[in-house]
Image (cartoon, rainbow, N blue to C red; front, top):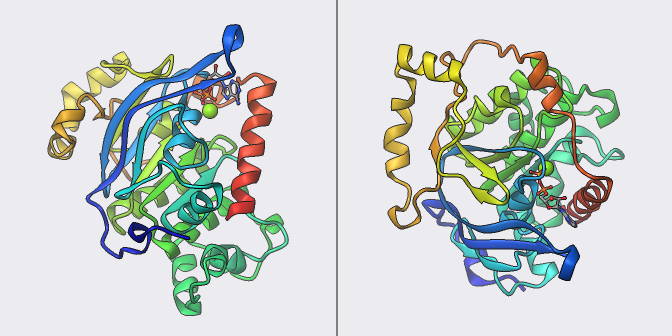
Length: 316
Ligand code: ADP
Ligand code: MG
């Protein structure tokens, strides 16, 4: 059974709230504190990058925020709905109805066509699928020629765009993306992140994207920096960015948006130190940032992540 707030049609002005969220894996001597009292508030219609070194808790943050995993302590509110106390099946239904997901490995079901993949969450939720609307979002995602293709026939960027089209169709409260361009080259990265920007700035959706790639983070409006499971007060601003910022004054466009963040939760979000000056220009990630995309997680954490992704694919 879904709770009443799940069926409300009104959209919360606050897309995501975390209050003192902690997550500890294991216990005793082997306990690992992956998140340590994270508090944040993100308004609807925002594009936030969560960055930080490997092992800093980015994926754990995303999984707790998205209802894919439960925090050890603290509160998570997504699109106005508190996730506390929900059963696994309630959480799965909530994710289907109110959230969208992008993963590094695209998360499409290989036996379904592009169109069927896009319509899947609606079908599983027992909601009617508007065929014309389905085609419309695929065309918006640049996939008009691919509607009846199978995922294996698509490039990586196209597969990720199918996942974005799926989110455009359902209009979720929050799209959660974990390293969505981690498996893509720089040109494909640009295609996918430009589409995500459109989802936010044209369609009014909310995106929270985990990435350890500064080039990818530069597409977001603001950046949260994690270190050892905490949001750090001062993001490490690259010297080149500071110089560019002084020349262009580019952080000013974020000032109003950030002022809207809940005062009682500050500091929760920062202007994006990586933001590119021209949204139309193609990123040129350095070799260093390409290397930074390589997963550096321990094998156990990798397997856990894969099983969590599988769990979501099944839930979706
Ligand atoms: P990031 O995404 O920033 O690389 P993670 O959230 O994956 O970081 O991991 C944060 C910390 O929690 C790391 O020390 C990682 O090894 C640990 N961790 C993550 N998942 C698990 C798990 N399922 N069991 C034990 N430790 C985990
Ligand atoms: Mg991660």
